[in-house]
Length: 186
Length: 394
Image (cartoon, rainbow over all chains, first blue to last red; front, top):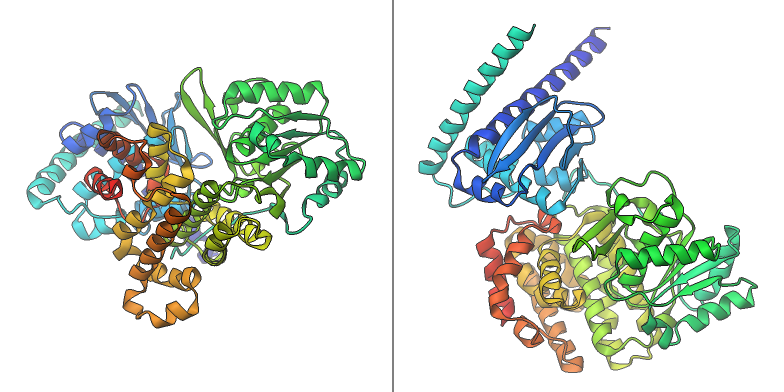
């Protein structure tokens, strides 16, 4: 009985963690696309209006972002229901948890068939590079090494620290705004 | 090595002497009485349809229709035309005879005749198909692509100038028939280029991120056969045993890479093929050693192991363990030199005479967005890819 309770609590916690990380990543993608030249250059090549969704099958947590043009990304929220041009879908919540808790690199998840890509593969490769750049900027080097295939050798502290501060500051504001909105709607 | 992997290959492989004569038995086993052949003009001109038709006639199986005009780059229009022919003739199975283009075309035709409609683009992408298709058999006439055991097909949409990818395990044929008669007449430069394609499939399957124990077994077996038989076949094109070795190696390499994917050699090859229209096998041969050198420190251990399969136990044991990875690359370079000597297969981009140096930037940019690059052990930047291209230029 106790074992069953703790298992279900752990599963609930895992789902909440994945949902929270998706929400954080959504805001962080929007934030970093405002100032990081590497991300802006990569995102500029995406078609304007492209909607990218990362989600967990069958109906798990998700994030959606839209390329609004000029390399700028806009977070569309965690309950986006509109048309999607490119999606990366984890086959199971456990697989998303492995990646989002940095136990498995994103490319390893691809290699291990943890995810299904639907849409233009070239754009999925580009979005993966954007996610890698985000992780390299915002995570401590030791953690980032566990998240990306190769930590960028040219990324020095002078670029990383202001970048990370910029992302965390913007994400904090956005998440507080989200919480206020959610509070008002209840 | 990954802690987790998936491996899937439900294709029955019928290989060896008189393998073609098993086709009627396979057809009757699924109650097919009106099969259709999809092939190209070159295969027909080389007389490669004759033994297939003869084998069927002897067993009272009538070929209901033959489409023999598949071009090297097939299109949605051709797929639609063939599907219409299939329906008009009330066929009940498809036999693809040829190389990658005929096989991919047949896979796409099978989608239309099974699912209905005329718009093959509607089925593009991964996971769109949800049920088994019509009976499908493949008889490869080249030994390189491995398409007979892969679950993908690529068809050009000429109206929209895009290539449509199709990915589904339902695209896999019921059986692949590997008969040495079908590759005996391959010209030397195609034999060489397609074998290098298979060697690259196996080498990348064994050294890239999604390698796994089962794909490793197929990859090493393929490399052993290529190492043993490629030059022997180049010296004696009528060597049926050697031809079968290469055809089997191609199928095994296909099974390996469709379960562990490929890496940067393919990214560069796809980009070069798209921009400069160089044959895929040649591109693989051009880039393989340079990409292995680039990846060397990340793949030293598996690459060192490949020396045993490529060069045999004597060379492997005589080479110091610390030098085996480099020796594998040297062996591949030596193989390319021998192929150049025998059939002038180009070893550098410059030797192809089909590229201009100012196209390298475009190739590098396109390669960076290729899906295969995800599985490459190193995260290649634009600058690094350009540097590999400079080396391959020669």
